[in-house]
Image (cartoon, rainbow, N blue to C red; front, side, top):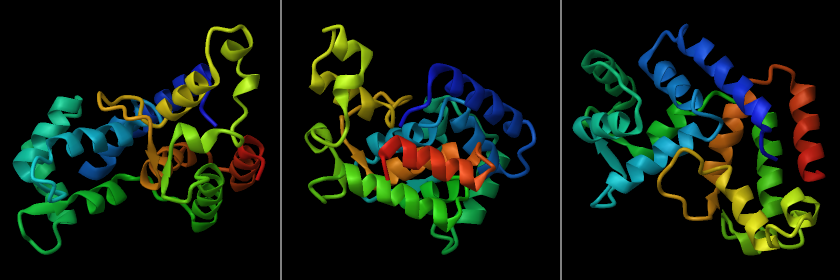
Length: 209
């Protein structure tokens, strides 16, 4: 399930409104990302992954600041210091990449997380923790897509376009979606849906749960 163009626009407007009321650096950065769309957190995550040359999944203050600036999310030096003080609990001078993304993700009730996990498991046919175009065959109905029906796209094109939904805003698009990326995306959408019943209905209708 992806947001329509109008829903995406409304989502971005709501995120900008929340950005203006952000009380902490992590909230400010969260809504800077989501103002780009529901996949904004994934975009920043991918930006950091590109910079992680030694693959240690740690971010120094300098790496963090550069990654944010390159992505277009600017925090003052004082805000970066405060964010690090909150997340770098062992005072190592670095923050764990996964820990940072968990803090950046909007809070989400466990019931909603369980529902999102159910949808992910349905799509991840191979069970390897990554959704690929091959997983979507027979699960995601590409033939109902207008561009498939008019002959402009093949089934594989529809699958690739669907997976891009979760990678939008990043220059690194690999056509694969991990559980964390899937959860990041839906935590953004969840933050804009106050009604648990509506969120539940939206997910069940989208994925036939």
